[in-house]
Structure formats: structure tokens, C-alpha cells
Image (tube, rainbow over all chains, first blue to last red; front, side):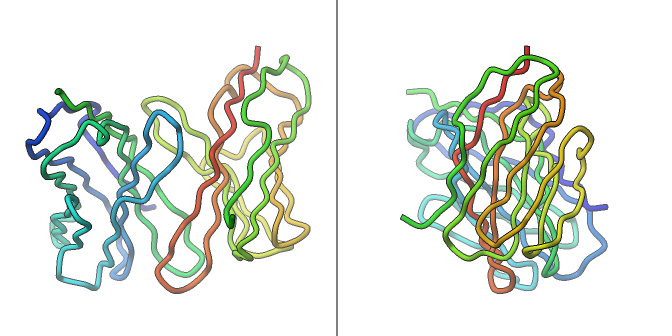
Length: 114
Length: 113
């Protein structure tokens, strides 16, 4: 069974600084997708970034980028120029196959210090 | 606006009562899912449906049932609620194939007392 591990329950970053959130996963599949979701206090699940395993290039969305290490099964999220609005819970998630489900990590709470 | 509608937004329920959480999507997505979110545990899959007329068990299915009579609706039923079912419940859907984009509802906060 696939598992997703987020070992850090909480992190804090100074506004305008850069922070990296860690995620590792375990799978025997060769083709899969990885996601980072943001959940602010509103409870809404917001897709931050997505990475296809067959793509070697790391995904980037504005201030958000990933460091995808397929051999190490690592998928970390880097947030550059952190803003107060980035404060939220972040979930790493995995899926593979046409009928596969989304498996989540336990999440990390990110706080941003002004 | 296309998306997922969940109802109710929140509910306080007496233990032993029956409760159905509603989920409706208007995107014609084939696959639908129910997750529960608990602090420190992330989101865990309860039940899923890959297409209308089919359902499957997820990681934590005990005490819950689902049905998928049509593409749009995927209700989750607690037959006899217990306090351990206090949680936030999310419904999600996905268009099969392509980039595997998932859409989430806004969640239902359920408290069983």
C-alpha cells in the first residue's frame, strides 16, 4: 500500500523568507502523481502544485516550487518570499492509476511571523 | 459555479442517531470520494465510487455506508453515530484520466455527543 509521510507537524517562517516543507512517500508504482494542498482556516482544500512522476523537471507555480527526487521518493515544497496568507496547514498527497484514490500525509501547520 | 456542494456545513448529533451527509457535484466527474479529517491524522479515505452504480471501501469504512445512484450525488450515511465519528468530512470528485485534478467540497463538521 502506498504511504505518504510528513514527519514535521509544525514549522514557522519569517515573512519574506523561504521555507521548505518535507514529504516522503512509498510506492512500487512507476507512474504516479504527487500534490501539495493548502488548507487555510476556512477549511477549503486548495491545490498548490502538482508533479507528474514521469516528468524530470520540478514543477513551479509562482512562489511555490517542488524538489522531486524520484529515486529517494521525496517531494518537498519550497515557498519563497513567504507571505502572511501562506499560513495554513499543508498536505502532501499521492495517487496513481486511473481508478486510484488520493492518499494524504498527516499534514504540517505552517505559521508565518510578521 | 461548477463544483461540489456539501450539506450540512456543521451538525451536532446525539450518539445513536442516524445521519446522512449530502454531496452533490455538477462537473459530471466519474469518481467521487469521502474523507474524514482528524487532527494529527490527515485525511483518511472512508468510501469511494469510481463510477455511478459502484462503490468501494477505503481505509476507515466501519460505521459508514455510501450509495451512488447517479453521477452527481454521493451521500454518506452514519447508521448509528458514535463519538469517535466526530470529525470534519470532505467529499471530493475527480474526472478520470488526464491530469487527475481533484475537486473538494467545503466540508461538514460533525460533532457526535
